Amino acid sequence: MAAARGAHYGLYLDTMKGIILAGGKGTRLLPATRVMNKHMIPIRNYPMILYPLSTLVRGFGIHDILIVTGGDHVGAFAEFLGDGSVYETALTYRVQKEAGGIAQALLLAEAFSGGEQVVVILGDNIFEHEPIQTEVLSRDHAHLFLKDVPDPQRFGVATLSEGRVSSIVEKPVTPESPYAVTGLYVYPPDVYERIKVLKPSARNELEITDVNNSYVAQKRCTAHILTGFWSDAGTPASLARTIEWAEEAAPPFE
Image 1 (cartoon, one colour):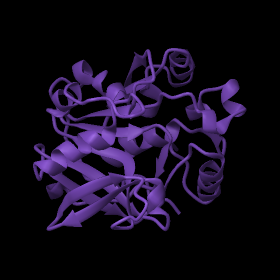
Image 2 (cartoon, rainbow, N blue to C red):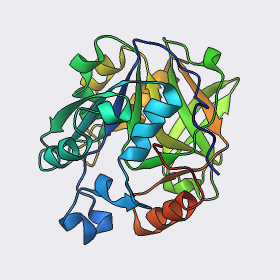
Image 3 (tube, rainbow, N blue to C red):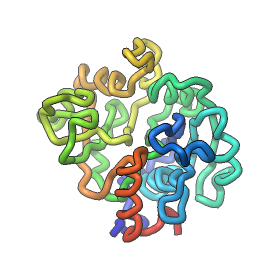
């Protein structure tokens, strides 16, 4: 079962803002994504986007949130979510005009962030709320949320040393740990300057793993290991797994 509402991650900073990255074409969920944005696909009878929104609002106590999505989809989100007041938040929307990677999408939030620390969540990542210790969330450090998984080679894999993340390897053949890097991150205000100097990957995208590793290199990356449910919902198998979990979990908003 999901944790009771009100069990927050522990951040109660009035100035902190949230960002949901909900772009992409959703090709792995075709043919459904021919007629709707991936993040509007139902999990139970709740559109997927409500789960990351709930993580920010219910989990972190954040009420000022930006949704970044592709140009073809912002209208669908705005029509469904409106200004966010029904969900106890104020929503802003930005359009990612081209598929340039997660880090490029995050860069669109620079003005919105206003020089404040931000919590970033990928729109297809579904989390069970659970509390964490607030003292590990330094304003000067990046903070990752990790999950012990049986198939870490499918993900970015983090190794830990002396309470910090010591390395992150994307989809390693032989993982050095079972800890997958989930799509939930806390970043200090300097994250945008780091994105601006990134070089595109072989996929011609700005990779969020490179952003995270820039903090790792400076020993400015901490982590929390999740014990509750986590899954992305971007493939038929992971979507089915998430729906199965959701059948017994509390709804994202009550």
